[in-house]
Length: 125
Image (cartoon, rainbow, N blue to C red):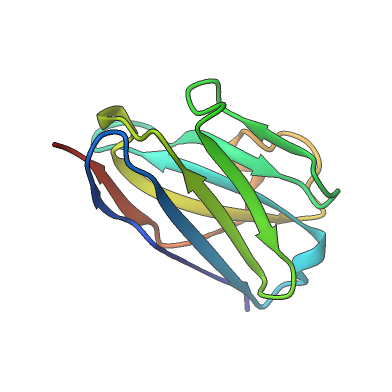
């Protein structure tokens, strides 16, 4: 049974950095496309970043390019979202999602059948 568990969220000041992680179990990690999405209260879930199972094939939302980095540790079956230069507009619950063998549409929530429970990131002075 697939299970995704995010961690690492918290309250930080503007300009700070934060790393969130997503541990995946119950799936063959090496063949997964991994996506990160955010959802602010009252808003729809938005794409943040994704990587497919081809190494170094990553894509980012324009709003986070140059600030966020998605990576994965295959041995630990973990995806990471490294966030720098955080701004108040980044405040949201952050979710990881996976799609076995996914290669296209990685910016779309409907592409992903498996989701974590989310971790809250709050950027405030």
